[in-house]
Length: 133
Image (cartoon, rainbow, N blue to C red):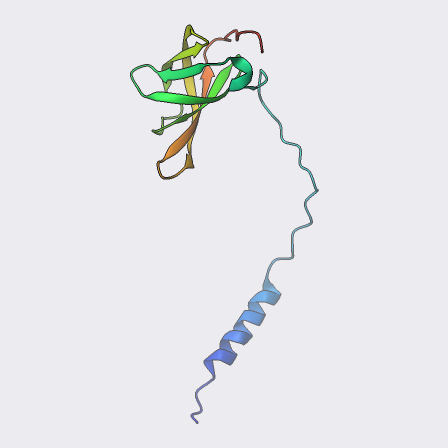
């Protein structure tokens, strides 16, 4: 055997020193944390808005609406849209078409293979939805 230090023992000692010097654990989080929902209008699922709901982005691709409110819509898109951009949306509910200008709030990857983005749009003006069914 050589007089060289045992590396396993050295690293075990170093790990023990680092563990002792680590920051104290954080206090336990409460069971439920209230989240401030900054919505101006309640979300309405598509099946409560109408039998046939379609959404398309003028000059762009179709989008699959997830939920809608009087102030905006959440949709699935096949491309990421730049937050802050302004788009013209065509919202069709049971054959009734509405052109709505909207600002893109966020666009994040929702699933892969194929890539799908969840994109949130905020309408420039409050939009009256049909009576709930």
